[in-house]
Image (cartoon, rainbow, N blue to C red; front, side, top):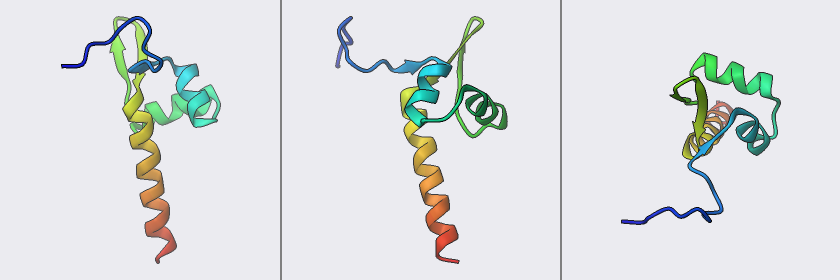
Length: 72
C-alpha cells in the first residue's frame, strides 16, 4: 500500500480556489458546478474539498459530451 508523506507534490483533496485554478475557471463557477452536482465535493466538518480525481472526471465527462455533440 502506498503511503502518503508530508512531501507529496499533489494533494488528494483541493480547496475550492485550488480546484478553480486547476480548471482555469472562477470560484463562482466552481461553486455553481458543485451546486449542480457536476463537480463532486467532500465535506469535512464545515470545510468543502474537491477530490483531485473529481476534477479529472469532470473534464473527461465534458470532453465525452463535447465529442458526442460533435458527431450529431
